[in-house]
Amino acid sequence: MLLACGIAAWILYVIANVIGTIVWDGYRWKSFTISELSAIDAPSPPLVPSPMLVFGVLSICFAFGVLAVAGRKRDLRLTGWLLLAIGILSLAGPFVLVVSGMLAAVEGPRIAGSDPPPWVGLTERICVGAYLLWMAVLSGALLRTRGARADLRTEAATSDEQPAEGGLAQGA
Image (cartoon, rainbow, N blue to C red; front, top):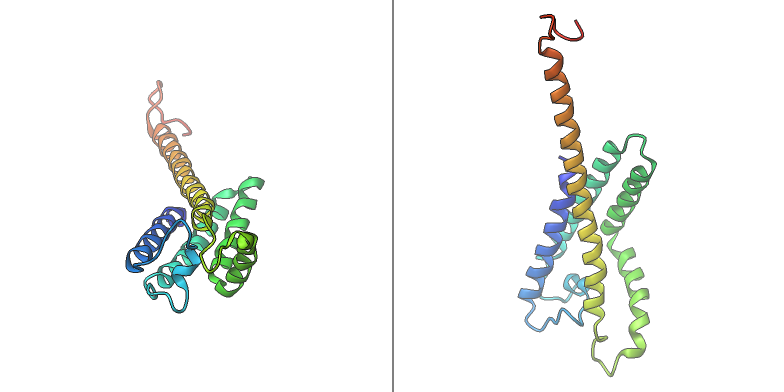
């Protein structure tokens, strides 16, 4: 169940982004950042911040799911801890806004007058989209792997109950 939260978080993030752009008449997705959808004076609140809060919670649940199935796999444990950190940061909005603002400052020289930085919205969406796609693929892969392991356990348990050639069940 926790692993499915990775897919649910991805879907919710995309839906919140699409709804925010629909309600904001002058919003241009290529040049406006995703965080602008959650701005105090944006026409989209509370349609965007509320799902984004749920996205953060789902991300944290997914991280716990990854940690739960990681077992002794060091790389998967590290991935789970990093996902947990990202989920916690997504709930820490002001910090994320400050860091995003610092990163967006790189686009500063490209600003002509009061126009938004060209392509900053598109480049941000590519970065966020790559992360969300990775999150969904990891979630699906772990769900399949976990399901495959459960199927193998079921088959092993079933074969233990089948009578052997001598008429006795194996393991008896």
